[in-house]
Image (cartoon, rainbow, N blue to C red; front, side):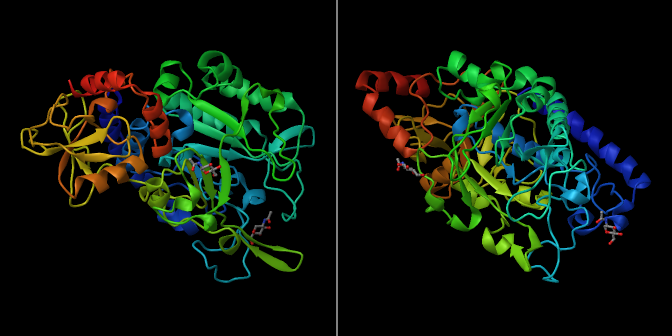
Length: 482
Ligand SMILES: *[C@@H]1O[C@H](CO)[C@@H](O)[C@H](O)[C@H]1NC(C)=O
Ligand SMILES: *[C@@H]1O[C@H](CO)[C@@H](O)[C@H](O)[C@H]1NC(C)=O
């Protein structure tokens, strides 16, 4: 994985940079609320200025690994950490909650406070923390497309003080230019048809351009099936933009379908979620976004309270374990992002992952990943059923680290979990043992096995079982085991 050595240099540079910064900005005294819990430079309202939040490189690298393990999943199965109403964030000024008085987390004290923002940090900082799903509400007024949090209960009108729609799009484009190999999904939450297609498509064209996997690409290049992230990466596509049909009308606002797809997921409130294994209705085939709501404001003599009406997310961990595609949190901050981690232990990988001799051990004690210094110690291997991918077991014998091990039972292959849900299934199948994990899918030159298609969940696996012949199965397992 070529990016690892680069990230190591970046880490060293970052630490030096942090030390220098540490002596020149001690502005945290002026920071308010959540901004006072991170290191950053604050604006006059006490919120971190765009791009100034210092994020732990370990967290960044770990969440990057959690995207990389998903490279061979089709786009619509991939888990993205999502920031609900990402654009409705305090660094954009008082129309976006810079003057909010509610102190996070709820229940709010005093209860007669105002909290109109959903986020504390800029898009750049959210992306730096590991958010990969961005949400934009676009409204047209005063001759421009803008972003604004408006609607029936929000007592505000679109006006010339609202930020232009092109700003967040440019911000995302600039971030992607600086961060190779990342993927971003943009959710256009357009509430009513705003028309003015050019005002939407123009900024997408200008700031994202060929990065976007367009509806035409999906039709012409991928036969209307979502490609895997690995295929997208090879094809230079790292952005997908979608709109979800408006409740009631069922209308999609696709602005001629030049960039925007009709969305493939269903939106649900946080308080409709239930922990693993119920998972709020998540099953093998559906795609779900669960959203929270931190807002609290006066409307027609009553306070509307998001935390009780919709719920808040204090942790991402159950959503990740359930395979939820889009857990959309409010007031996203580094500690919340850390709750999404299921892979590297703190400080890991202690040894960079460079090639197929780099070994990864899952600790049966804390269920986290390590790069042990001794790759020759004898451990079991994590084995995944090639047909029913949710079925994991231990190898029949122990051995030293070997990507080509033949120690898995027939029909199983030495593997690496493809997301948080598969990681959970693996833990259930290996009985708290320390096991080797297959490093191969994280390497740049990895060729994913062609047979059979990796079905992320049981229903899909059954479909694969139905079409696969015994001969193909034998060939497939031979291919995996050799
Ligand atoms: C924001 O709050 C400050 C302090 O309460 C106040 O002086 C200022 O007028 C407020 N600004 C807006 C635009 O509401
Ligand atoms: C999964 O859930 C959806 C509703 O979200 C339902 O329409 C679909 O039939 C379910 N699929 C399976 C395989 O249970």
